[in-house]
Image (spheres, rainbow, N blue to C red):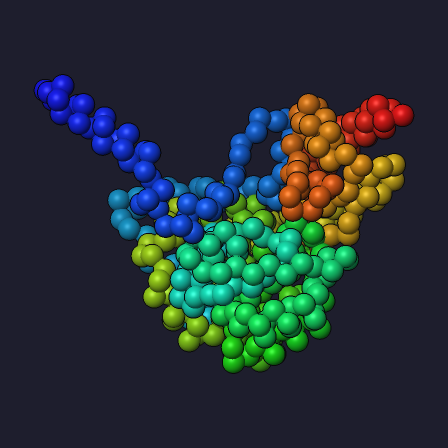
Length: 370
């Protein structure tokens, strides 16, 4: 048994560390605000840009997974299927535990400063700060497109090692001007890596930048399977030149993509018809939902090429709380796009429940104001 003296010493040491933790933590980490992925009880969950459709049939492959063995460190089978689907070579693909890990690896390998438009995916800035690199956010124009002049000025002044461009962009939903993106890629060809994050590309009318990969040595494309029904697996991947993949692979942790995720993702990739059917269903529902939102007085939706819609309301806080009171969870964009909420495209039934609740909440709010 431990003596009371030993226990007391332990308590004192714990209290000392708790009181003085700031002295031990890196300043960039102490000042960092952690990303909050909250689980809020609700009847209809439309806040996280997840697909409403899963792939239950894929889970039968789990019986063949050897859980006592480490996974394939190179995810060869999955990369071969992805390469065939995309028309590229497996050596041009690097697997990641979701896009977040790949962002970590990119910044770790190439450093900063790291430049990106705002608002955009928050992890670019969070991970840059966590790694002690300078993050530079450049405001979008009023229509949420890139501000080409401001970006050009910042690139000349800050000399970023990495530029992130998410298109379609989260949380605005729009694709950036291809001309402006190409100008940035071309003008930084010998200075910066340009990461085009195409997480939402499957829902867009545009084909994305993959066909241009061979034309620009500094172009890197980032994609994920999370938005198309596999969010629980955490499977992301980079597409780039073999030379870039080789360097990023040096800082990738071994066995980063577990055997279960590899097996299910590979199974899904062999059943692409179901995958495409789900994507088409989400796009159809997105167009219906946009039209319905446009017809609600006091609601102003923004056009979207993603699996969500950003919309402006007269009092975002009250509408958000009102929807939550009706059992519907959306994303409150306070501090990101003021006065706006973001709703993920759900199933037809989920969208119907959301619209019904929104109409009630907006009507009650307008009555209160009057």
